[in-house]
Length: 195
Image (cartoon, rainbow, N blue to C red):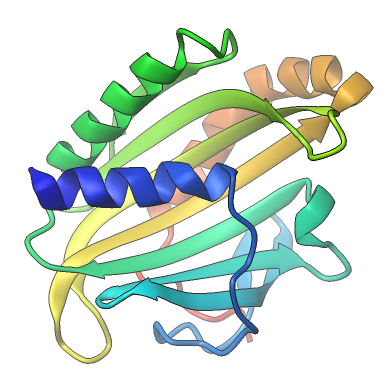
């Protein structure tokens, strides 16, 4: 369970952390990722700790300080069970709910053998105090990295709105999130390059 809690803390922590290093593929995703009719380009790749690699992808011209949509691809070496990771993350979200009224989540089983998707909403603030609403869908799959090491993959999509754009964002989310979750359930792990 300790491994599961570590991964859960790291992935939920993406909400608060920005990119840590320049882009250079470390997970075998050599080009852009196509998702929901948008192309995402590798913008950050980092190894925050041994055995854990995270890569973040943004649309061309987008920046981390005020992005509206982002793709995530991560790999953690070790004995990764998607159900344990999702259970740990939902516990963290339940705890966060006491201070964040936006917190809400749903768990979706992907096709047999394709892991679990955690679909969740939360909120926060920019450093300047602007309110943020963030919706994420994280798909967890056990597997091997390009070097053949066993572990767990996370492939996710993140969408954000700021300030006055939050209410229309939440309204759109009601109709758009189902399609995003379905697209995420169908994407290859790791994602294949759109190039």
